[in-house]
Length: 18
Image 1 (cartoon, rainbow, N blue to C red):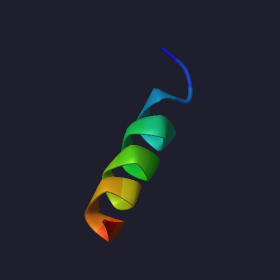
Image 2 (cartoon, helix red, strand yellow):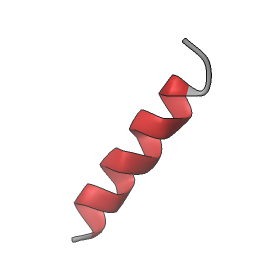
Image 3 (cartoon, helix red, strand yellow):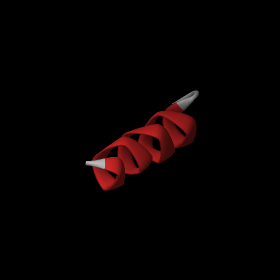
Image 4 (spheres, rainbow, N blue to C red):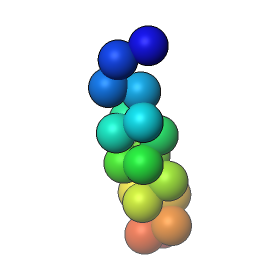
């Protein structure tokens, strides 16, 4: 479980950008 938070945060930001 490494770099999982960053991945989730980036995914959420990208999803919100849409």
